[in-house]
Image 1 (tube, rainbow, N blue to C red):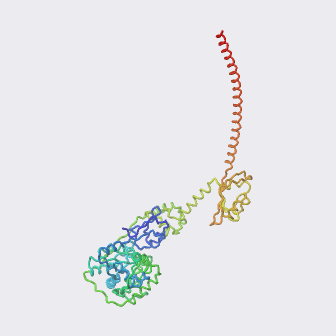
Image 2 (cartoon, rainbow, N blue to C red):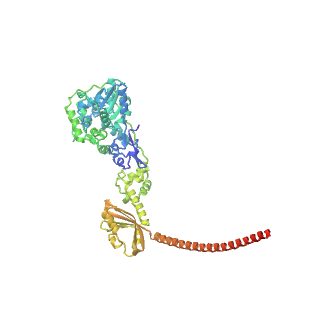
Length: 562
């Protein structure tokens, strides 16, 4: 399953995820965003920034619940940033609530951080190469994919999560079900790197929802205080350095950096040999792990940081844990360089031309598409990650062009006035209709051209007029009008259809009908007259015939009698 998926039905074509992604690992296809896994570093910015919540994070919560239902010993490794991200709970209350869910043991991931910090201390004394912390999986992804030349600088050791998983498995047995809970999306994918050391990863958001769903009422229990106090500083900037050395912020030999953009700036400087510190502590989230993308907390970062620091300071200084010899914490990072096809200058220009950018001056570099420049977006189009339709100025220009074409070629007169009846816009058809007496000019009053009583009525009453027949004898025009208010701009729009020829033809047809009726009536009258004359003639003839036949019969009958 993908760590982050986009629900297309909720993706509203806003390109906000493209703008927020520091490595542009978002592809747009038919207006919908998709995550490009080979490029993605799982920083989670697209999840946080999506206004429609179209980006969804994988959940392994059912796997954890299943293990509890099966009766397995479930042990939770709780990220040390929990103290700043669950401020609605007291620490002892939170632990008790988690235990009530069926979790047998809860330990702080800071125990794993303690192990990692020892390795970091040892690296400082070996060789002259700059060492970059490998605690943050987003930073590791960033270097493996975009700074492969620095892969050898990554500390060759597992993350605190993986280290803690190894320790738990060693102490509780390989059959123990270990689940990590933290504010980081990248930890979900990191779990696959470490095989059986971690059985599941859930986010603080998912844990919070699970707790709300359970609604358990349990007595308070004491906080587990097993972690070394200094390792509890890991989730805040400078905390990794603080765990194994005394760090002065003015010390240029070590660097603590948080936030992806700042990390990239430091890595660029290291790659170009502008800097050469002994150690770089790098955290992808601005403000450290307390500001993780799936912490589920809306408290400000300084408040979270203060809680973590306060908790670490009041912790008792426990003795360092003994590291079992059989546990292997060494890890080799990989070169996963992102390789994408690069267009030549002619291909870039051809793509730019498709959006009306024929010169450098045409390249607005507005960033509305999500890319920093028009050229960068053109390259993304070539690579199949962007579409030409993402260019907002071009699409607006295109829409306006289409609208102008429709308006300019409309056979109907279109006139726009303000509430004072001053002409704001008109199209060629209006000009043709009403320029016979006085030239129609923008900025002049419509009253100088036509009777605008209906326009004024609409402006005052705010009700549209549809299908009204209006004659303009001075122009020899008969029109059918639709006049509507445009509230948001304080304007009135009139669409006047010239029905003069229609009216003329209608009158001609009516006249033709009347003439036809008259002709038909005349013919009918003539026919009736002829019919009557024929009937009269037929009547006389019939009478004469009858008389002759009766006379014949009489004669015949009389002759027979004699």
